[in-house]
Length: 507
Image (cartoon, rainbow, N blue to C red; front, side, top):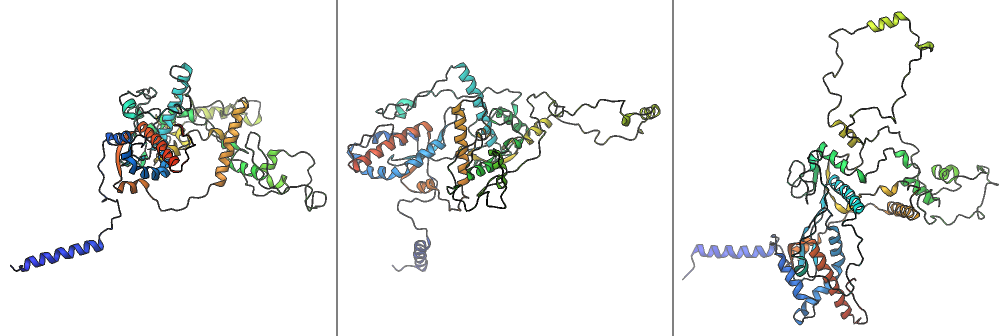
């Protein structure tokens, strides 16, 4: 039977469509799937894979050894992501999105722990208070032994030993329902304010906005971690530029870090000229203090190179941080209280005639005249909080901002930049100096980041058929990574015939 005209047209259209789909369709690489979202696997799936593979001694897994060895280069990244997503003391359990290989070769935490910076600081402030109380009472406080497990003890199996065990209670400070009311309901949540569209942008959790009352409570809770210093003149000759100058001149500020000489060509005998044959030289016979040489490097040094001029003085601040919440917003503090004006009748400038005094006493403004802003209150309940937050350090002087990764937030980064109290033991003062030295060197050697095309490793892994996604407890991921790392190194030792090496479980 001959084909009808409609059948011929349909066949021609199908050929044309298949031809163009091959020409213009997306080319699929080996192992890649379509960009549809993968279904989340149950946790028992990866649990069974890890348990069945064991130490890969079974012959049926001999073809998987190549995948395990290939995953060895990703173990540092797996450990980094594990540490990045470490649960905080106020969390009982942290479940993390996970991506894992079909052979169980490697498991990654597929999450970035973003947080609201003021909330995170306040949470650690409450942890500080709770820790001090716990250490004082010595009820649950004990030192941890490292390494925690024996060298020959394999990692525990999560399903057999941990799954059915009730985790310990989270460490949370008891909040007051009245004083801490603005944050009482959500302070210790896994993602605070995630459900409020007015204060957080949505499920992506990228931007935050807090009210004045919330910021005031968070600032109060984090007071343990925040410096009380308000006047920047405290850091004169103890700031970044002064340390740069001290390093360049091979000097050491008292209490500051010591560095290797920046220039090694300083020899007094090899100079082409000295103070005796140079007509432009200023001769200072007495000993020059180190502070003078750093504060005025071009005056008190013979050959200043690579020095940085630090500010000499900043305007003095008269703000006094109040510790008593019952004080009014505006009051006379005894530290900055002006001198009382005593009436001295003997002074010729203040002697007034009796008639003048009577005229002053009888003077009255007309009734229609009223003071400006008569109906405006001098302060409200939020005024003192607003003033305190105005002078507060970052992030408490902000009302809104972007989320930050937890490990990017310096909780006590300002402590070692202050002068170490002289009554502290020597080891503490040495620790201050080492931290200062590391901070100065990091600032000196840091370069502006290069613009790079971002590559998302886990997105690329997720597109392949070799990886699945699920949600696991952080402890389970850690146990899996320990077991995987041990198996990989064991395979590498046998592959390279390094049988004389002994690999223990605390590798």
